Length: 366
Image 1 (cartoon, rainbow, N blue to C red):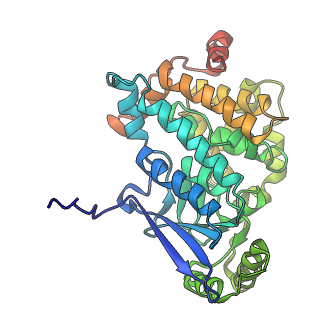
Image 2 (image 1 turned 90 degrees about the vertical axis):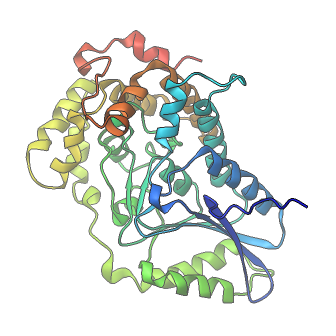
């Protein structure tokens, strides 16, 4: 008899926690801490069917998503695998791994946003790109002292995706546009202010939160209210270490520098801030190295999506992302930052002033 070898290291671990009254809280733990829990196609293909099955399972009252390790919840998509997909000959199936990745990632993100039961996301550590995509859709998004969220895609020739056209447009004032163009890092208080998180809870209270959730009776109760009441209680115990929100502090200044009639003028105003030494200076410095194509795509995409539903935004992003896979700017950005690490990307257009509008338009066409 041949035994299938058990995979000793699953990239996502699934568990079920029993509650006092015999209901279940279903758990998904991203489990590649050495890779900062970066999201791979394999992980998406494990998580999506599991979520669908939990949605149908009457015993499951809530879903809990977390990650192994203290450094990162999920530092984004597996960019190196996407680079291979862009630069190596395609498989016989005709669908590149990159196209499959974006298609299935956005389906999973939509599933989380529209999930019929509470989804608690414990967003401890770094969450960037695809990690924000998972987090943004959860009904109860928890941030901790070490939470750092960012959408830094412009530095690698991509653009803020994973429904950013939807959630960045819903941030107060023009903070979403600022965060999308700069890739600035948000702390826990920032994430709550811009609408990407709901509650701040000290990481040391996590075990107590889990204990309280499993001790509760769920039968006949509103599951969303059960989760809300437990999280609220622990949030109240965490208020003493909630950091200040720089995005909130600098709200007026962010709105001032993003007030312009053209992207070129706007970026020039934003870059004037980068010579100082505070949070605004640090946040605007990446604009110098960002892909002018990416900045234009981000700006145009957010304008295009202002009135769109979540599903409409994700459909537009799939078109954009497929074009990013084939047009070379994304591959060059990844090469310079992560493959050759020379940090000298040769962008197709060196500045916004040289940008060709036909080139930009081509990204938005099916």
